[in-house]
Length: 405
Image 1 (tube, one colour):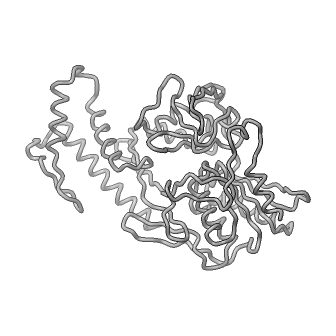
Image 2 (cartoon, helix red, strand yellow):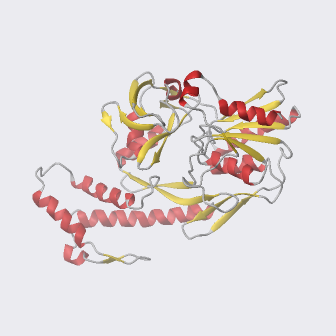
Image 3 (cartoon, one colour):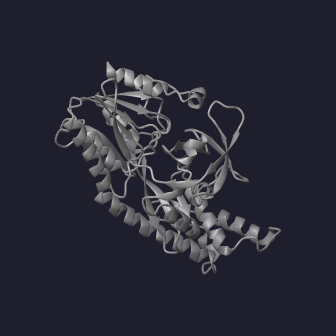
């Protein structure tokens, strides 16, 4: 990971150079457009800027409202266009204002809002998962819901997910109205949600079955105040299970949006013998790093069933995939979200920032975890909209049946 951090720092310096260069040539035009017809960047082909300046000059000359946009906004718009050309919804440029909002919303262990993880699907913004116990879930928001509008704002194709998040978040006690389209429905639904303080624990341990001899670990996220704190919570959970001599474990990863990659590696290690591949990371140069179980885990020879759904993403897929492909766990539910990339956040000199995908996460078999290659359950069970309304959980019932045998 040290190499990854070093690479991120180098990239940050390069981005600063490019951004500063763009701002320099647009503000003041110290170099004439004729001199900028072709610019050579290290490691790439010459870039011809003629078309860029043609469009810039046409807008300056002909647009009906001369002062509708500031020079600074033109620069940010150009950079956003450059970043979006990579076609990766997780790689985005945020202006100083957007960066400030993003940082403020991610400070501390608690935040105020509706408690839902957002993502992309086919250029639309969707609910990856509403967090357990959150205002969003209590109001009826479901994994896979398409977000059509937030209050009076109609969501547009190409909208920045961080901008939509900021529209949804707000002070506890205030209300927001989401227009969503549930999967399988043909008509949209308006849902009013009263925002709250989101304080969801990363995991809970309980005991189920007729004799309460099955450990149920409900992991809602792979984050805490720090990786060390998450690992400590996991170790305490494992220690309690072992103290009761329990050899059957049901892990619920449904609605888990992920978190620390290393947390998933830490948990998976407890189920695997020494020297087994848990996951792999591939960088932009095609270099692959293996993450291998270290010393034989604390939970070897336990029977494991894992629950997943379309809201299971990122680190939760790493854990499920590792145990499935190493023949340790049976997976029950529906196909997962398919989020197998890691992003680095680089702060730029003017207070803006770029979130850039720097790594692919690979499953033990070497395949890239993505939207087309997510985790497919061994036993597929779907909870329908009717099940949701009636409070029926066929996925859990099937998982409990399998692990009770």
